[in-house]
Length: 451
Image (cartoon, rainbow, N blue to C red; front, side, top):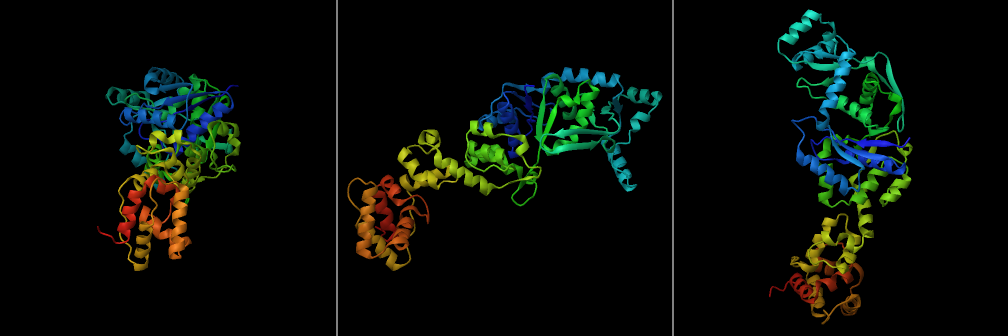
């Protein structure tokens, strides 16, 4: 069977790394097996869904390198299909009306807990007589609609987690339709997956219980639960083992992109996180070729920003000038890029080094008299004319001969005076970009010359 998979975010916020990992898994699985990747927007929640989030989702997916063969499909455009499916469930007795308020339901849950019972819905609405139901309908109060779950269990062989079993009797009958008639995700998703021929559902481990419920709904709609294979990726946790859900604001794709994380680095990191594969730079085709759902561990994967930064540095080191030209400061040259790229964790840091070679940074004067004397001598010995790597090398050799300084004693004060930084790109690469006049001014000021 040719796979048909879907990624179905809700446009109620920005995509975060957990969403991105699921999107990548779906896209790579489809590509690996010559299947179809469908993008669906679960946007029936009118109060929370916003067009700017929808636009951001599409933009972030494209930035990550993900394309889709079908979509974006909007659930808000399929409300009639959900209403028709709901009517079929009502006719079969599987979807029943309930009139309890949120306060009444909360009271029931507290009472069940007090009695040592599971806080699930007691199906009181099913016990209403025809007369009681008619009075409720006549009152003008709109009901919400619950799905009557089957007895027993829902079990499947998960493509990542192995055998999974959900005890339906231990769950509340889920609400599928709100009082205003709009469907909830649990219901609309099943209708879509059934009608659009989805063959594989790849999503996070937090949906395992949903899967048990949705397989039961799918069967009630006349579908075959075994026709859809499920794969649940273990959730991401932080480097400290804490759930990422507590810090997702800073781990949105939008924030990481703004910080200078490369799409290729993030994609390679998320795809290989939680597998035995090396965390290393990889292009899209390489990720497709190596993708295997069975390779994912069943344990939570640790998302470590330090590890991601290290990978990002490796990706940046390999990028040619043409790949970053439009994202570098105005005026930056290929020479500049080749000089600094090996010292960047984030592309945004290139702006700091552009300021060093083309701006007006002014390091403060040195305190030690011997350092000031050395820097004054360095300023006086600056070669005239155009500079290249050999010119810089000849200058530092001359300084060693004149002052006896070499190694750290020679280069540390020069680097601090010229760049304001303890570490960074080679001075032999930076100085030709900086130019003699700028270097002379900084050395003189660092030596204490206020003129």
